Length: 409
Image 1 (spheres, rainbow, N blue to C red):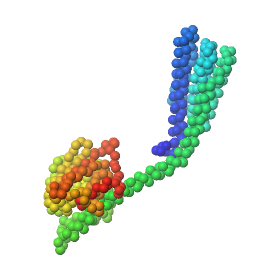
Image 2: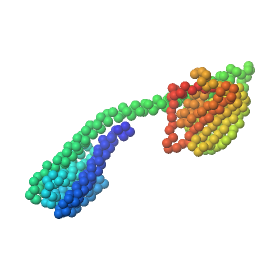
Image 3: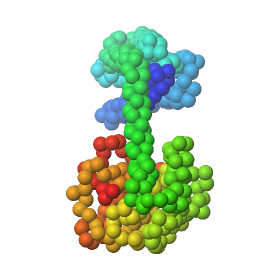
Image 4: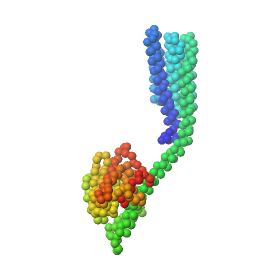
């Protein structure tokens, strides 16, 4: 029931049940036809063409009732069905002398009247229509028995069908009522879980941005020589302060998602680190970034910036290479340096650069990060983000979902 609006659940359930009854009614008439044909194979003197013809109007009226599903079509089905049951019963009781076969066949043609299902979604109303259908069938077979002088038949299968219909409809109605009481709580729980996951993602992104801006700036200021602040550092601090005091840090949408906007955002990050003294060589096809959705593009560009900041602060080298690849399914960016490298397992848990600013950030947009490094052999960070598809999941990562990975910052 979860996922069906509460006010629609009873109607959806009842409608599905009625449709199942209609299918069973068709199956009952086909079973009657097959039984007649099999009986003819054992006794060729029996003439059952009239009985087979009597089934055709009932099949047609089932189709009409399925099409319209109103009380008028239900009444028409009962009227036509009652006449057809009488016709069928007269032929069968006149030509078939085996009592149990006759009783079975009469039950099979009365069952569709029991399964008429009514025209509403109220369980009690469906049961009343079924009782009415059974009554019509019982009267029709009784009249046929009186005309042919045959004995009355108990119609055991029809009685069992009526009991089954009443049971399944009434039990289903109670289940629907329970679902109506429970569903709001389930929906509320699902909504709260979604909100919690979203909040965790926002908090993780905020933590990563604070690391990329405030902590980096404080480190740069602490290492700067005495005297006025470097102009480039001052401009960067001002820009980041404006972003943090506004809502730009939270926005994952770009005002323009065309090719030029994506490449410009990427080149802006590269230019910032070049202005800080890092020699950055760009290879590959940066235009591939334009195929990413805005949240994925923002995450990837910010992660590249975090990688370059790690190179400047920790790698002990003044050069790095950034390569962009397009394999048709994902955009991959690799940041490579020939610096001192590090042992990722030995990095302190309080260092958040690679974990928050790269791994978690790329993970939140469904991407993947791989790192190859060791002391003295440089570092390579490969970030792959899938292009938007109908089935691409976007994974929200909370604080605890870091798999114990550390970072170089």
